[in-house]
Image 1 (tube, helix red, strand yellow):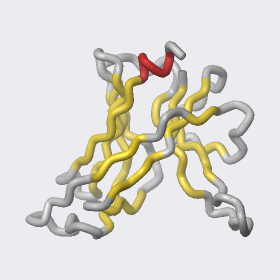
Image 2 (tube, helix red, strand yellow):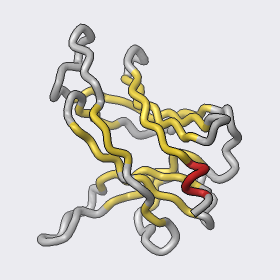
Image 3 (cartoon, one colour):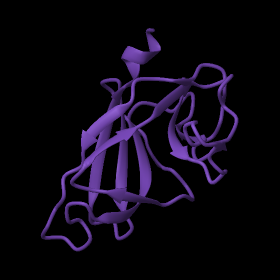
Image 4 (spheres, helix red, strand yellow):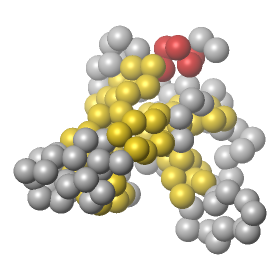
Length: 141
């Protein structure tokens, strides 16, 4: 299965409807257990110290490469369980105070125990936040 996270699109929102979401490939089909890959290109503003919800998506048919952005995905990619958590602030580190935004890039690891780790890595590489998703449980559905 190929895995994606949903990110807000730059396209204009339509009143009364949810804003458009793009699918960002974070783990291509066939990514081997025990490997780690950086998601190229995009940088995000991560708000720490507050609850956050990541939309998680998957496809059994698409073979996108890591970092591919898909605009119109509704027919080939389906929504999985979201990842919800609170990313802890580290007040001793610059930029990581509660409610503060830290610029991050994404990094993906597929573990041997069947989890997909999506790491949010600060621009300077000194701060990392881990989001986990059980991919074996989803593949069996």
